[in-house]
Length: 131
Image (tube, rainbow, N blue to C red; front, side):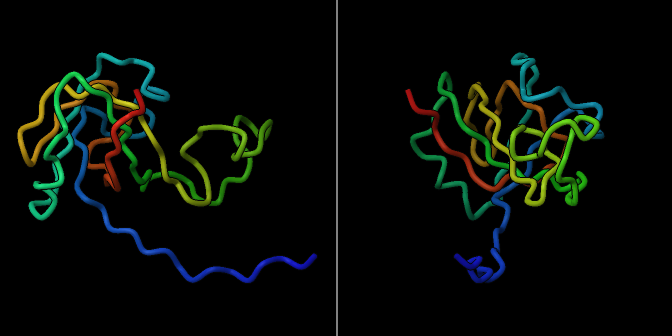
């Protein structure tokens, strides 16, 4: 069986950014395990109406682009594991997902807890968590 032909390049525009207290990837907690750490997602004005129906006391999956990590890594943890067997942000397509608690929705801002992103990280999408 031959390998499939490569697909055309994928274009994806951020819907906003997340504001956090973390300046570098080394400053950020791993995997959002410190759930009390707060941040603010700031959407671009054209996406404000997309927040209708999102409310505090819910959880949301924040899909974001780890734009400051190594993209050529295929192995992580000192070469012990292949990147696809981990949740490490260092990967060929550094698209990450973090589950956050919604604390407040005041368009164009969403205040959340459980952030593990660096300040000014591009946000690609918000999806309500399954209940």
